[in-house]
Image (cartoon, rainbow, N blue to C red; front, side, top):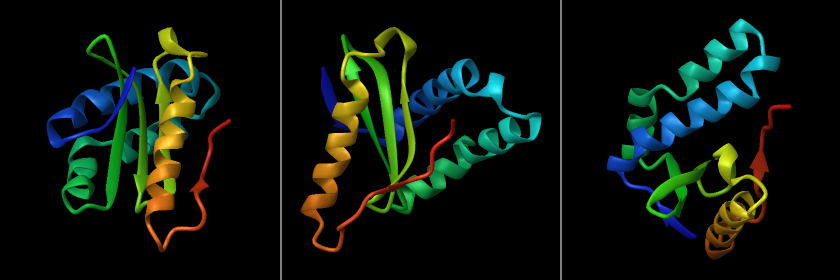
Length: 120
């Protein structure tokens, strides 16, 4: 298991994983409007623009050369995505991704809190 900072070339794969996991675990309990809003939120072109401007950072967990989990932050301290492939739940991937963000936040002298907005 390896946690890496994702690059531009990794973004589509990360967003595909986010969408798959969202559709399986979140969408069934969400409204059509909620699903559409999430789809807009993770739209590739929008995410790439934010990524290139340095407004959003993606970290990924790699197991056997497969992207198994993703965490994204706005700035260094707001978690805006955290997703783990269902085949890798309960293996500490989400915790490792969170701790990576926590360490990044601690290394930034202007960061003293981490925020997150969560779905059910």
